[in-house]
Length: 391
Picture 1 (cartoon, one colour):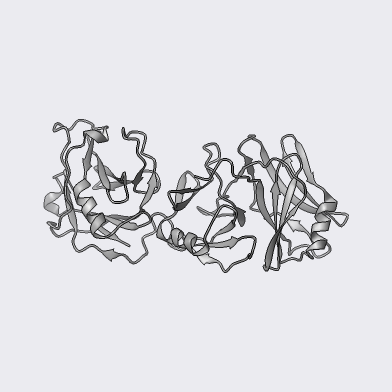
Picture 2 (cartoon, helix red, strand yellow):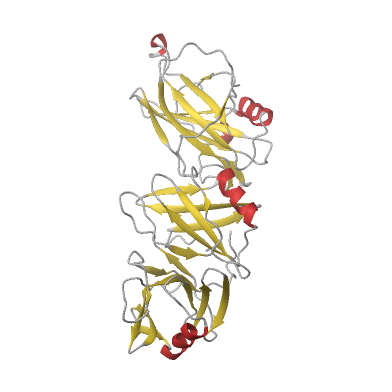
């Protein structure tokens, strides 16, 4: 996770407004609403305006307004010959101290000091329209804070991931696509990344650094968790997993260490009627879920919260994967039955073989189809049918 010692200020970008003809003007995008000051607990809003032909940047918060020195802004505009197509980044360091970063004509970026001070870390809220929209904003790699869980960007063991909260759900931007983007641009914490959401699960990202800016946007399409319109290499066969209560009497099983039944994925599958549900899971590394007794870092799937899927309207299944190493995968299935009891089944042997045979590693995408069993098996209640493909 990003270091807490990372020097971050309030970073937002403004673009010269196209709607004001009399005076050139910095304008905060209209979707740029609240800026949550995570460490101080204040709400701040930023606006930049021209007053008597002098630029002013105002940060509004509960303790009063904070102004960037108008003369300083005017000097910035004059020194860099700012025009309507230019992008300016402001970094607030508290005590009315700002830094200004200018990207002129998308040819270079330069950091102009407006003073010095102790930086303050912020989180920016993603505004929601029609399910999920983002203001055009830039952000660096913020450490996760439970009080403001809007953007969560972290690096763990060489793997980068981004989580974005929309409504009450999280979207994971991760896996091979993001890793490819990270590797191609040699991302590090001194860079700025502009994320643009275009609807229908389509993202583009633009990287800014000290040597170049306004790189060609890199398409991040298909990164959304649950997006299935992708081509996957199909597994040779379908698989069925016979589930048995691990304690033999149907009682609830809560301790992962108590699971002693392991079932191999196999091809002994009858003809299936239809696919009940289909979703994509992305391998990532994370800390062990709270209900597990082991404390080693593991990889689990899915990459968001546990995802429930209805099967024949009688029970829900939760599928997740854990691993203590990159080569050893542990898979469990939760079945919630009509009596409210939980059955948890381990698939360690079969899944590990599947992962090893197909060289699955962190960042791999795996597609799971939950299948409707044949009519004669509807009353079984102890057989879960799935097909698995990977990318």
